[in-house]
Structures are given as structure tokens and as C-alpha cells.
Image 1 (cartoon, rainbow, N blue to C red):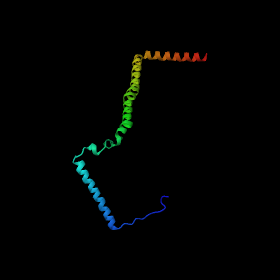
Image 2 (image 1 turned 45 degrees about the horizontal axis):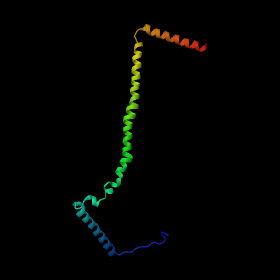
Image 3 (image 1 turned 90 degrees about the vertical axis):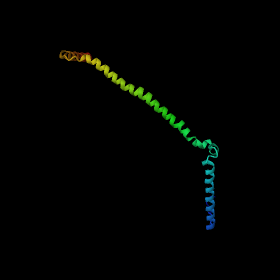
Image 4 (image 1 turned 45 degrees about the vertical axis):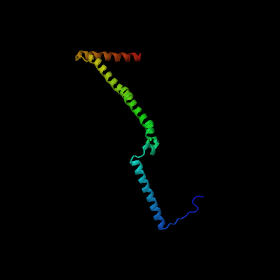
Length: 136
């Protein structure tokens, strides 16, 4: 069972100092070896660092494939299909409809009062005819 017995290690100051010196010497030796081999370009980088580490475990490739490329495709679809065709088409269609309706209504607005009175009379007759037709 884990944790039943705890061992307390007691080390003297000399042991601690010796271990500290050994650890420091190992670290300095590693730095010196790295400097001699890698920083002075005595060995090709590909021999020291494998491809998977140079490519950062292929995280960037995965990100590009799984997130960036689909996001780019969605953005292009939104910009060139949804925005250009649907939204701009709707706005331009409403504008064209208003322009065409205004062009047709322009002919009705002649500026002569007799034409407007005639339109009011024809409208009143049409409403009366509708009311009579509904009641019969």
C-alpha cells in the first residue's frame, strides 16, 4: 500500500555539497558539449535534431490542416458567395425594384389636377363596386 511507510533521508552537509558540485559540473559539461558541437556548426542540424522536432511535432501542420484551411474556405465562401450573391443581390434587387416602380409611377404624376381628380373618382367607383359586389 502506498504511503504506509515514509522514509526520511538524512544527508550531511558534505554529501549535499558533493552532489551540488557534481550536478553543476554535469550541467557545465553539457553546455560545453552543446557549444562545441551545435553552435560551431560541426555537425549538421538534421543529425542532432530529428525532423519531428524541427517540425514542432507537426502541430503547425495539423493546425493549418484542421483549423486554418477550413476557416479560410469558410471565409472565402462567406465573402464571395453569401455576401456577393445573396446580400448584395438582395440589396441591388430591392434598389432595382424601387427604380422600376418609380419609373412606372412617374408617368402617373403629370402635375395636372384634373388627372388626380380622375384617379380619385375612379378609385371611389372601384371601392363602391367592390362593396356592392360583396353585399349581393
